[in-house]
Image (tube, rainbow over the protein chains, first blue to last red):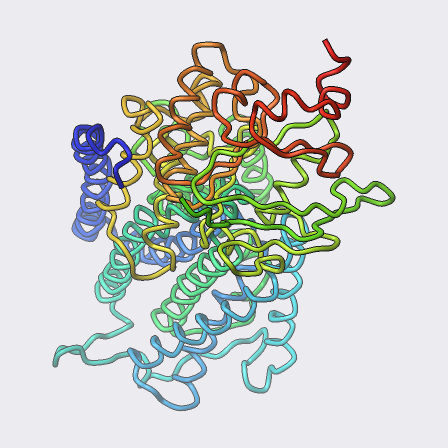
Length: 337
Length: 247
């Protein structure tokens, strides 16, 4: 194209390195975070190592949720159904078929991929408040199904995975799911892999389209994109990561139950993301850590801890609607995406 | 030079309730020209170009683009065929930077599918080129929402350019611009016209006369007149309907 190509090179030259450094800073922060988390096991008590293990897995769930809510701007109230899909697909295959843990984990991921794709096809025909209600209803239906088929799922009581499903061998080394250290490092490895994958998705062309749909969907259509497909891609990735977290949770702690598919878990993913910062890569981890530790401490002091949590959330929403990292991004560090 | 028809409408119409906003318009646009559409307020100009771009579906008639009937295609598919549309009311991504705004458009052309296609460096270079072409080359990292209004209009055009369309539709592009901004805008449109056919809705007659090869006049949804600027300014019916009483 002859259109002012003479002007282009200097602009490109000035634009690219600056933007690479932006992304580079975030990537460096991602790596530093992973390294810092790894070091925690050498300084924290056993109790806290276990708490961090749970935080890491729930943070993966919140990161999946954030993909849809933070990056694409679609607020789902039913993500527990994907967490539950991964949890049940992985747990039930392990319980009934005796598949090894890595295979069960893979089954959990594939099942939540298929499930979120199908639910996305239907739910994304709606927008805004209708979308929230439709996702909520699908999730309630899924939750009630886990109770209805309690002969298979164990319902409320749940199922405890048998002893031979509590370990697997990785390249000859035995991985014992009853060991705190093994659980922590396994959760951290998977958390780190998801975090790095999220970095590349959100900071690349796909993430650009998610942001475009979030910021101005009609404009994005008029630039040639089928925005339904873009939203479906975001929904499917989001549901799959949430399901991956569920599968990991079930297999690491050796227990599956219908509570994990309940409304409570959909709300937790939303809360963790809101507190940490929607549309920031590390927000879900921070939000999960802050809220989990807060609830842990408060429940030691008072049984009315949920009331205090509620008040804190109202305050956060009132004065820091962009969450902790979102507020920092706005005021000081624009690269914190 | 043989005229190649790029876009044609046959009996194109759109009704809103009892109102026929666009009424049986037969229209032809030749490849490479700059065409202005003028007409009094409420003549159906914006509705007409919305029918061309696919933003609203027609009640009747056809739109044929480059020999293909696109009447039933959704807007985003028409964009991919080469019909780019810039909005009358500035419609950008206010919280993203100038470069990010244009990158979305560049990605549509260079990486049309979700997976595969061009790399980031190529998308970025194409976006920077389009931004530079409208004179926004030194504002790439500025957040679009804080740009002056005139620059936001130019950003709209840059997004249209990054699509490298065969037809660029501009809906009242100079509305709200200062005289010096308008002069710059005319230059930008002339440059765009080296690559693309331009269809512009415009109220400012100075801009119309400076740019248009041919002018189409709409009145009450119907095609009133069509011709060169000289023919249109001399047309008695146009003067009566649009320019007011004969001087």
